[in-house]
Length: 196
Image 1 (tube, rainbow, N blue to C red):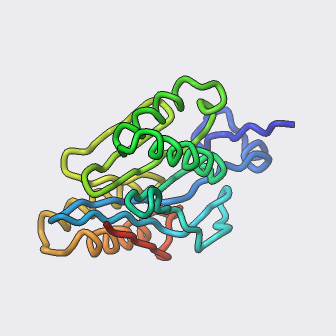
Image 2: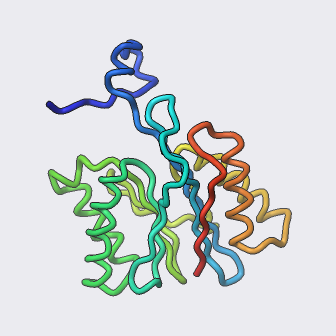
């Protein structure tokens, strides 16, 4: 039997339906690019319905012999399926941007991939990208990316820190994720940061 996950804000979802099909929420992923350094970080919380079920999940991966960092938000199984595909695309095209575009095309058009519910943040020494299942490949102008439940909070904090401090990209990611973790109930303060 296939379970259908119901959006919490679905007006037709009764409390009983929400309990039978809890919405999985988790994650704040943030990337900042500053002064030749790019940092990518994420919190460790995984939430099932109204309950935090894991506090130390690692939602970051190094690909291409450590030259590419990927952070993911959404379904873990879907994210791992996409990571495997993306790693194959990097090997095939030897370009992060081209690999991201080709993955987004497949993700949007392939019947199986189209059902995957996740978002990816992909960074290397030259490019920062957001990838989604609707075919989006977005390169933010200022090099700041926030995805997941607390992504907007982390992005706002990072932009303020960039404008009003001399902190490194790594420190900005760490501090902004702490701020998001204090605000977003689907995020925590168990933070991991990777840099290039």
